[in-house]
Length: 180
Image (cartoon, rainbow, N blue to C red; front, top):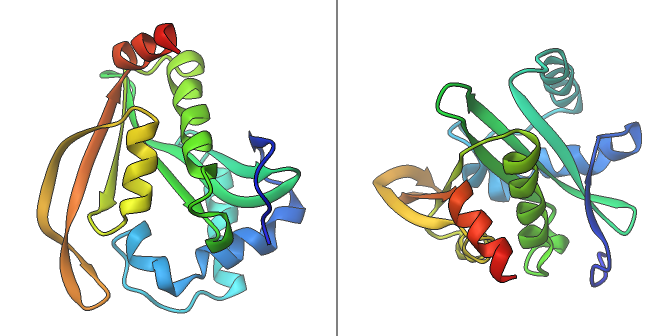
């Protein structure tokens, strides 16, 4: 059980995190919310191979573990970097007991700051299925604006859903920092 967070941090993955991150990756209940692949059981061997492949492709993404008071509760990343236009996509996944507690909003806010300050990005963007209202609310709290939708773009648990497209510009983020 995850208690109310006192400290949410983003950090590198350690060997101790693999069980929690495997649990998250293998969660069939949220499979469609995380990608376009067909839902299927994920073996530990397949997961370990995917982690190893991702580690060898260091330029493709920046990945962090979401840590609450010393315990891994999810992962968050920047990926799909466009070096010319200076933007990337953000993605987050939390274990069930960490959702709805403000942890996602804090982690997203931290990664957005990393994207603009450390990676010199001009824009970050994301996609979410329309029914994932908790995630959309967290993105809005972090400053993301609705930019559009792809109608009936995702097959989610037996029906088609819209994909909501959201983005945040560095200039918008900077303005929020002045008022905060």
